Image 1 (cartoon, rainbow, N blue to C red):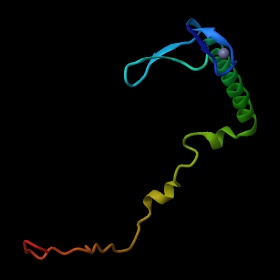
Image 2: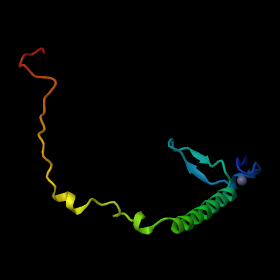
Image 3: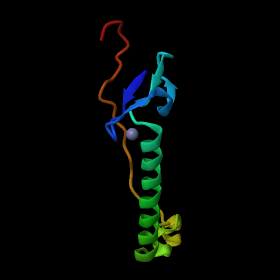
Length: 98
Ligand SMILES: [Zn+2]
């Protein structure tokens, strides 16, 4: 049985397509052949690497750190003045039918 790859538009044997089961537990074959999939993964990794190099070059590591935007230590000691009044919009009167 042959299947057409959506990437390279070539008819190939089913062996060239990876198999998976969908949510209904049916056997399915991917639309893209193994060769094209491998190529896509390789390209993706390559672009990720280029992007990472770019990011390392252009971004400040101090700013990108996870604790870069911590609150000022003085802010923790601050006391917020003010009163909060909670007023329900619906008042239960006690009757069966309100
Ligand atoms: Zn292909």
